[in-house]
Structure formats: C-alpha cells, structure tokens
Image (tube, rainbow, N blue to C red; front, top):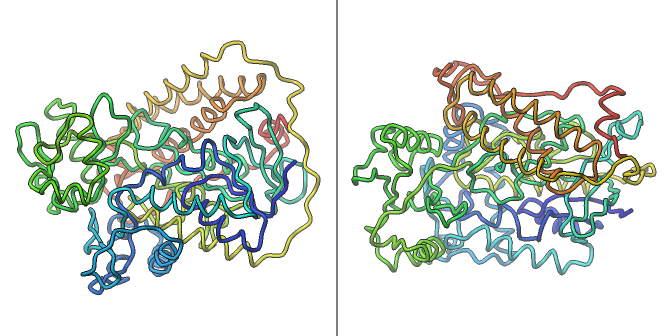
Amino acid sequence: MLRFDTLIIGSGLAGLTLAIKLAERQKVGLITKKSLMDGASDRAQGGIAAVLAEDDTLDAHIRDTLTAGAGLCDEAATRYVVEHGKAAIEWLIAQGVPFTKDSSNQMGYHLTREGGHSRRRIIHAADATGHAVQETLAARVLKHPNISVLENHVSVDLITGNKLGLADNRCYGAYALNTLSDEVITIAAQNTILATGGSGKVYLYTTNPDTATGDGIAMAWRAGCRVANMEFIQFHPTCLYHPHAKSFLISEAVRGEGGVLKLPDGTRFMHWHDARAELAPRDVVARAIDFEMKKHGLDCVYLDISHQSVEFLQEHFPTIYARCLSLGINISKEPIPVVPAVHFTCGGVMADLHARTDVDNLYAVGETAYSGLHGANRLASNSLLECLVFADAAANDILGKSPQPSPALPAWDESRVTDADEQIVIAHNWAELRHFMWDYVGIVRTNKRLQRAQHRIQLLQDEIHEYYTNFHISSDLLELRNLVLNAELIVNSALSRHESRGLHYSKDYPDTLPQALPTILTPAPATALNLRLSAQKI
C-alpha cells in the first residue's frame, strides 16, 4: 500500500498546479495513465483568457462567458473564476511559463482574441500554450521531493466508506492498475483529487488524446456523486481534415486573427448563420459547418487565412503552419480543410467553489468537474483558466483541514477471476460505442436517435459488467467501462432536456425555454447489492 496526504489522479494543468501548491506542506502522490505530459492540457493551442489589458474589464469577461453559456452559467462561479484570472496568470509567469511577449501591451505580453470574446484577452505562448505551460510545471513537479509521480497507472475505482461498509461515505483513496506490471495497488490518502479530464473518446472523432475516457466522472458517479450538464458536449468547429492527421486542432485564434470559413467554391457562409460570422461562439460555428456540409454533401469546409503574410503565420501559428506544410498544405497560399470534432465536456462531477464534491475528502477540478463556469457552452480559452483557479481553491481548502483517522484499506482481490479468453470483445464494444455515439448523439439530436443509443448502451453495459466480474482487469477494459457509463450519462441528460440550448440542439425541441436550468443526475441510493457489485473485487 502507498500512503499520501493527497492523491491526485491526472496530470493535466489542474493536477500539476495542485501538486505544486500542496507539496510545500504535504506528501503528494500523482498518478497518470501514460506519461506526465500526456493529456488534453498539453494540446491546448489558443491560450488562457483573463482580464489583463487596460481596455478590458471583469464585467466584460463575465458578460462574454454568460452569453456563450446560453443562460446556464452559474454567475457566482463565473465571477469567482474571472476575478481570480489575473492572479492565476501571474502565478504561471512566476513559474517561468514563456508567454509570447509584446512591448506595446501594458503587461508586456501579446493578447489575442477568440470567438465569443469582446476584447483581446487571450495570453498565449505562440500557438502551443498548453505545451509551454505543461512543460514548465512538469519540470517543477518532477524535481519536488514531496511529489511522487506514478506514470503508467490507470485508476480503477475510488475507495469510500460505503464500499468498506462504514457509516460515513468519505473517500479514503483509490485502487490503481500498474499497466507495466498488471498489478493493482492500493493508495491511501486523506484527500483525493479527480483531475482526469473529459470524455471525448466516447465519440468517433475528437481532438482529445486517447486518455480522455471520462474516468473521473465515472468513478465519482459510482462513489455517489451527482453529475450535471453532461449533454453539453462541445464540438470544436475546426479540426484538420486529412487522412494522415489524427485529431489535429486548428486553433480558435486563427479565426480570431482574421481566418474566414469558406465552401469549396470559395464562398463565405458564416454571415448566413450569425451576425458575428467567424467570431461567433463555437456551438454556432460548429452547427453552421455541420449544416453546410450536410446541405452540400461535403466532407469538409475550408478555413482561409492566406491573406496574412508568411512571417505573420510563422510568428503566430508556428505549430499549425509547420504541421499543415508537412501534409502538403501551405496555409499562406491555400485554405485549410476542416471539420468539427468533439473537443470539450462542459458537464461533469458537481463541485462547489472549493472544488468539493458530494463525497467528503473527494475533489474534482478541470474538465472532470461541473463548476458552473461553462453553462451550455464553454467560452474559448476559459478551460485552462478554470483549471488554475479551482486547483488553487482546492489547495487552499485542503491545507486548511486537519488530518482525520483512516481505517485499514483492503488489498485488491482477484482470487475469483481468470484470464480473459477473448480480448476482441473489448475492441469490438469500444468501436461500436464510438460509432453510434457519433451517429446518434452528435451536433444535432433527436429523441429517436437518443433512444437508439440508450438501448445499445444497455446491451454494452451488460456485456462489460460480465467481463469485469469474471476476468482480470486491463486498462482497455477499465477505460471501456468508464466510457460506456459516460455515454449513459450524456444520453440520459440529453433525453431529459426538452429544449435546444447552447451545445444541445434537438430537432424535437428546437425552441429555447424561458427558464434556464442545469440538468442534474443523482446516483441511485446505495444498497447492499449495488455496493457489492461496485466493489466486487475489494
């Protein structure tokens, strides 16, 4: 058994920030499914939104966020995040993050503008902000003597009082599978943080990394936590369309710097769909592209920024310029073929302004959490800001608590399972899930499509449960188990919303209701039976 003051599951921006802020006073364990740099944070291109310029205001950023969120943002959470934005950026600068400089700006850093923002407020490191931030923080984490990093460890499930048969429902740690040794280890902790990212891999096409399988959301649900707004899946409008490019994102900032969307014949179309044209929020742009592709039978549309000079493109978008050029696309002379792809999970585990969940000593931060910031649609570049602000809030809450006595935790029991006879079942179910979620639970939805998906999810869950019960676990099985549960939460949330709002567009309910309410799902009360099933190998 390993024992830490705080266990952090996930190594994105939220997880690394928490580790650094806790490590001066605590012994911290950080587990990550692959390497420390794998994850969605490392792929973030555009930057981080914060009020930094003289001509910007907190109220303007709040207003832009609330507008993008289509009435569903929690105003208190939105104000909390925006008000702490500048301090979060200053902390990153103090850590050594190499943001792009600009001597004409009051702070000395270049600010760009993205869709939905009324001001230039996106601080960035060229077009690879996430990588610059992650690289800087990861170097600090690896050097810190109080932080133990466990790479190649997949979380299996949380250990809670309910599962141990105790009167309370505190979280006491988690089980994790070492994917190199196939050994399940027990990790005890006073506090446990879910920072595992979103569930983009539940869909066939996504900009998310392979690690985005909704593990934290699934584990929290099984532990008794509520989830909210899972129907709001953000499709990024502009993912590179090329047979040799896997999930390569064309940053929102390309449109912010004058890029225009066109049909194959060169006709612009965004002004037909929204007065803000290319600077409309992501849900509007994604639906517009989806509409035009279906109307004209297109495989993709085109994003054209060729009016900018080569020098401008290489300075502002060096990664995009080089990647497209390697595929034979010279973006200074020709448009970029793009399609929408799943990008961000706006809902998640319900958490308060201290990042606390419904289970004591269990926190959720970043894309795993539903903080109330994103509402029915996330405003561009607010996600990394959310990670920073709520990681800081969670750290302050944890450091303000006194240690509590913990029971002895049982080892993982595999005495009643055998080796799987056919691994093809997992691969087949994984492919089936991602295909029907793309077909039935995509940008435009209907009740009939959602019900078809719901039926197939139930069949998959029965097969996966039997597999999980009888055979040794593997990382593929654990991820599939979590993805199917996330799919169920997404579909059930979508079926319960009888309107179209933000990222959720239903042909059966095309109008928007006058009152905006979040979709909140609550797990069934714990019983002896479902506790045994959820903790069958404890």
